[in-house]
Length: 635
Ligand code: 6R9
Image 1 (cartoon, rainbow, N blue to C red):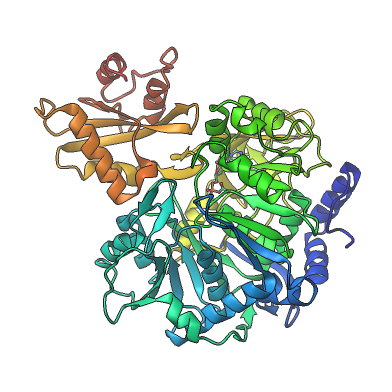
Image 2 (image 1 turned 135 degrees about the vertical axis):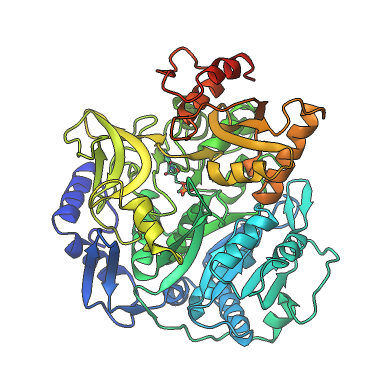
């Protein structure tokens, strides 16, 4: 296990330097030591950021599920792979061993095959956080089908867009889901979506809430009887290193969501290696990431990374507030969680509840605390450190993206001294750069600029499904020969990075990326709306909340404005999902525009944040007079 587990800061710097001096050699060593290959690569890396084209481990043959399951069977067949904690604390937790996981994945894979799914076919998975979600992801990977998991909080319209974008022929869902005290009719949402999706031939339905749903004959099938019939032996499809493993959609600043394509070998190597080091996972540990598998964090650090390490990974079906705000701490105590990975928005929501619900739980099993999804503010960082970690579990503030596949900038716990609000140092193999507005790299410490990455890493997304040009335009055109992240960052006097937030029109609300354009499209579909602009403003729990400026077709609209606000949010819920609802809606007669007709969001952002002292020069606007009017009527 030479360089697999980094032990101290000196070793980190050694490993880091080695990884930069000879990236191919470095990643080859990681790949050689820790995985099962049917054939090793002919070439470690081939890349050209101008095309852009990146290939890792070309020529290698493998199946990721053999690495996540089969190879553990001999040594840890009885070890819990997935620990399922249901929504209702009275329902018993399920310990699914590696042997049981193997059986379930093989059976599911055989069901997919029997339903005509083949290598390269796209399968949409729209499931709550129940074991079938992880099992269906792995079953797709077993037979080389490309999974596209859609978060089960998305609306039917959002689901339909994602199904059609990559031509899924199958949807895997459940009769419904539990979310705290509520149940959600997932199958009804799927039915509605599929009215717009001609390519879907089959819907497989897992039973969860035992509701009475409608089955469309010839299309819908209950999963259970099919699984009962299936053999528990499914030969893995042997995949090429660069065969797509999955598609995962992420919001862009404009246009429809981007289907990020991740491939097999590089993704596996990078997520496994980062998991082991960033969480300092040891064989007996129980690891819990509270994300949903519908997001990249769940793909990489609930499913693939942990399982590739033979870890015990917890899947939690519920929400932090049910039956009360002590639920997370109850679970930590119950399952003796060693590594706990969550989002700043959850930390802030829990911090608001005070500490009583923590004090009656034993959190002494915790060794590492993680944070991901958005910048963690100083107050939340200290609350987490003091009340959950009791100042002796290091916080790993992990910066990364759907596009990067794995953690990029992070402390290594017990190795890198932490600093509140700083993601600290690049992971081995990662070469960050800060760029100024003229496209020049800012060298040296104490710098502030746009965050780019100079050199490929194994788990980077390779393209946007069906639109390579958009991939190039979005990530490789802002700065020459660099991957542009869309984030701003600063580097302090010792070289630590602090991510300052998005510099594009993506707003992160409760850790979810939301593009302004699709929300504006939804608002504009309301018959009374002429035009709208959405910006973010600081919110003490969600990080950012959404503020909408809406121009009505008829400003004198006689309807009650509160009703209109409700209807607009209803449009958004239908088109995107409740996560994109606007906290504030201001009706206005105009929006500040440049002479070329672009909305000046900078001004709107300042007004929404109640920071109107320095709006800059507004005289060059097409319509400077609207600014004062908007300020006067701000909410
Ligand atoms: C993994 C994930 C990516 C965007 C990213 C950035 C923000 C994520 C962060 C962070 C500051 C951190 N972000 N982690 N900002 N500190 N530790 O969240 O992927 O959903 O694609 O979001 O989230 O702005 O660009 P994704």
